[in-house]
Image (cartoon, rainbow, N blue to C red; front, side):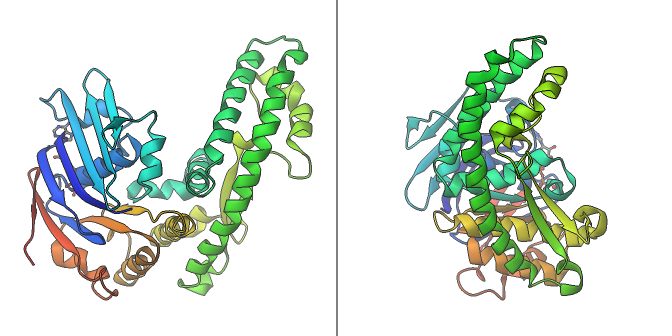
Length: 364
Ligand SMILES: Nc1ncnc2c1ncn2[C@@H]1O[C@H](COP(=O)(O)OP(=O)(O)OP(=O)(O)O)[C@@H](O)[C@H]1O
């Protein structure tokens, strides 16, 4: 669902901005440090309740201000609002009513981010990749969030018991039952969605050089040996779990691995090739959830690492699966280039100039 209006105050170096966005492509250009990424960050806060650059919301609040606010109106009319105060308090609102959790924001505004941290999908830990898969599952299988929450709750209790050291293993039984019940469900939903994601990912790889990307593959690992059920896996791991004080098997250890000729993809691919693999993955994720709701893409500095052909290919992938894209760049003409050969409305970007925290639409 596209963002039609974005208003923010006291967000990093942007004291105030109120923008009418285009439903397709929006370009934000200006010098280093002018505030371009902060605008993407503000949209990210609107869709997740947090920044993608800093875990501490307070660092985003303008230095001399007590609070920040971001407001967004979506194409369907839904209004989202996030407020953060320096004392750590804050408010999230959906259609003027307080939201129970930030996942309500995520359900209204699915987002995909491409920035310098996106490489972590290939070279980061399994947690990053698990989150990517779970983002996709969350948006297409609405029962997933409940099963995952129940699983994490039981895992926390089980680990608390394991940390105590010598315990009667019968104490674990109720938590094991809950783990198995919700864990098997989490795994089966992940497998189901992974199969769709795999297909979409492979489709995109066909647009890239066969000699390199023909061998790129992704494998799903459920977090325990696939030959046995979770109950049996927990039982087999019990002794080691008791010694180590935590649960070593289960869907919380799931991963998706990128391999090429049997090697981790990041060890083989060039930096630009890695970025294209990430772009293929992210647009494949968007294509899977598109049947429910097309995501908005936040793209920070597309040209870094990518040549012109790859930028144009990425733009085409985005136009096939996204509702809207917000892109930052230094210079207008170069930033607009990848979008200009696409069909309407993607070939008519709306341009904004950003300078010292002030944002102005560039007349056509
Ligand atoms: N809490 C804050 N209050 C005020 N200004 C801040 C705060 N945090 C960061 N800044 C400043 O805000 C500016 C915006 O940075 P931003 O990352 O948005 O710039 P950018 O235009 O994306 O730059 P680049 O092209 O270098 O990526 C920077 O000059 C930064 O020093």
